[in-house]
Image 1 (spheres, rainbow, N blue to C red):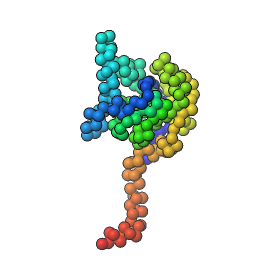
Image 2: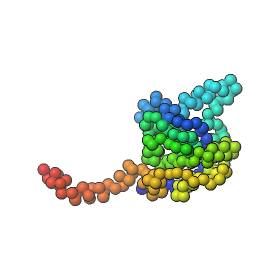
Image 3: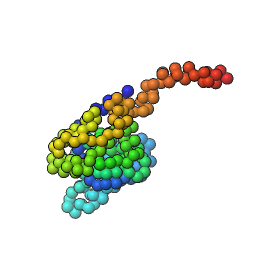
Image 4: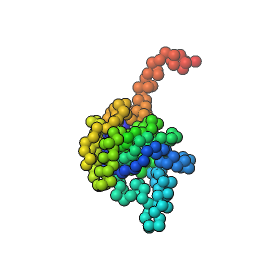
Length: 209
């Protein structure tokens, strides 16, 4: 059984903007990798380079949130609407997970992005626009605060208050029960699968041929 995920707690990074697609999360040139190792360093690489170029004259490394020292070590990424849209690539949540994020909070998420995150045990929780705006403002005002996403109660606690959040029932159940890793569940069920297969008469007849 996979790890049961009941809550994600820690500091949060605010990434403003809607319709941030997977090409921006992890540029296409990194899809040629054989493994996902090292992808965390390249999350939002092009956006971060553009941000760095824009402020280079001021002698600042980058004003992208992922390079902001106030958000260093954040475990939750707070985003806008339709986050993770565009092409389907598992590399996007893989890169963010390897950059240290363990949950995403936003107004809405692309369907495939949610599916890819769920397979990694990364909850994508939604907030009403007003609650999300209050959360972003509170985090930017006090980046050191601890944010708590409670999977069981579907709530998010921060200095902005306690807000109800949306989590898909199937994903929530899988996280709480530790069934989110489908490959691990399948491997652990190996003996039961073999017993069932051996009890099927048509498979037994096939094996005798």
